[in-house]
View: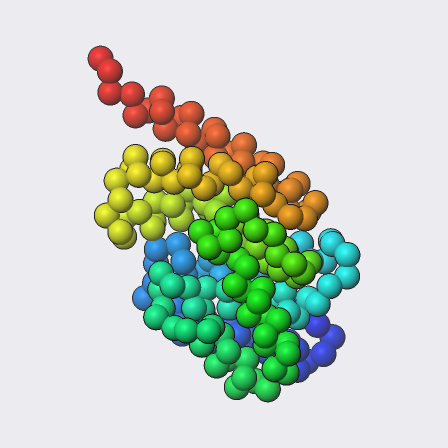
Length: 200
C-alpha cells in the first residue's frame, strides 16, 4: 500500500527502504533493518492519528534514524542520511529538518529532552515503542548476546531504560500504545524472577 498519492514521494520512501537494507546488511543486534522498518510503521501510524504534520519528514526520519547511529557507524553530521537525501534532490532545508528529527531520537543522548517539533516527538515515540513489549525484550537480549552481556545485565537494562519509557511518551497515541507494552515488560520480569530463583 502506498503512503502518498504522489508517486515521486512513494518512490523516495521505497528507495530509502532499499538504502537502509544495504546499510544494515550483517547487523543483527536489534539495531537493524527490521527495527528501522518497525519504527517507520509505528511513526506513520502515530502521525496519521495526531494533528496534521509533515508525514514525509516523519517517514524518512524514521527509516533513516539509525543510519548514523554511533554504535554502528563512524560518521559525522548524519553523513549516511544526508548522502541518501541529497542523492534524491531533497530540499536542503528539509534535509536539515529531517536530521534534526533524527538527532532527537536516541534515548541515551536525549534523556529528559522533548523534541521541538511534532514530527520529532512522533519519531522519538515510535523508536521508544520498539524498545518495549515483546519486541523490546527480544532486542534487549539480542544486543546483549552479541556484546557479551549476561542475562542479568539485560534485566538491568529494563530498569535503566525500558521501564521508564511509558512515562516519557510525547503523543497521546503513543501513550496509549505504550500501556500494554509496559504491562508485558512487567509480566516478563515477574516471570523471569520466578524462573531464575536458585534457592533450594
